[in-house]
Length: 354
Image 1 (cartoon, rainbow, N blue to C red):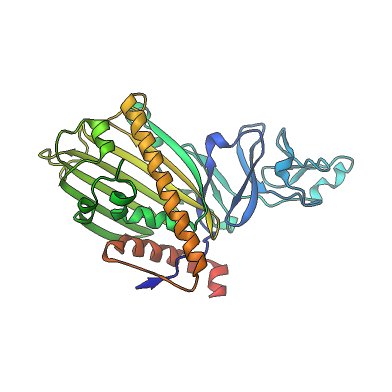
Image 2 (cartoon, one colour; image 1 turned 90 degrees about the vertical axis):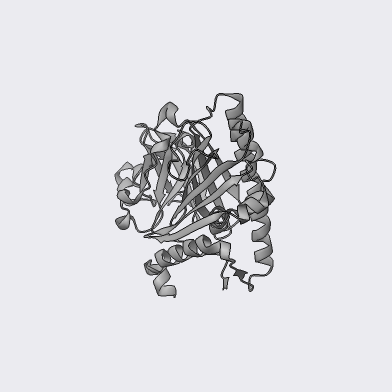
């Protein structure tokens, strides 16, 4: 079965615009869903996102500066508040209420700055994913990253929803042995707004990164539990325990490896995206040498993914008329794509186009 590899964008949804630490009193220019925006914090410390275009002469607001409760255009000094309204118009203060730039709904929680790029009247905060592992302190210390991919955001999701690539792309670190991944037992199901799978590699050789982190001496029972939440998030619980510890009945045990990862792909355009990720490590503190090495191995693995995915995108663009084919291992990939397509056809702009 073939499919259209480059997915159009869904606007009526929450996306991660930045990590909280990225948004400061200095303007930050970023392109999200094909629109140029500027991110900043006002005097109260609240994050704001506006279109990166002054309504006066189209100068990028990101070339200005943050002043008090707004951002000042660096061209003629007009100031716009976090709601997009003009709150300062040098020499024409009586007319400041006539001017406005577009603002976007913003919610900051759990170290993420979320943005709604579609119809602001549909922005329901309750739809934002709750991720308690960013607030679990020393029980689940986490580290994080942000990469720019020259690829459609769903190529990032596809990569996460079919793990049979691990033994080939990441064999020297987190991957392990290709045949172990091919032979894994797999349970896949559609969810209300996405897809989920859990795969078990029973009595399998641990990958080099797991050996270094947990000191495994023999085979392990390894799991990969992934849930895609449309349009751009994947929640991961991965880990391994020594054979004989009934891992299939209870994964919440001390020892071994237990990782919680959050992945999110925010489209920049139809052929590029921002990839935000974090990894929380339960049994191997990030301050130890083993913990630091495990984080490095994971970060390096994601860079290996980046190389492959960007090359994939380039090949697709050279032959846009040719689809891609699903294998049996791609059941979760297909379910994820279908969930995104269901979300897209409910958008007025998409429905009108189709």
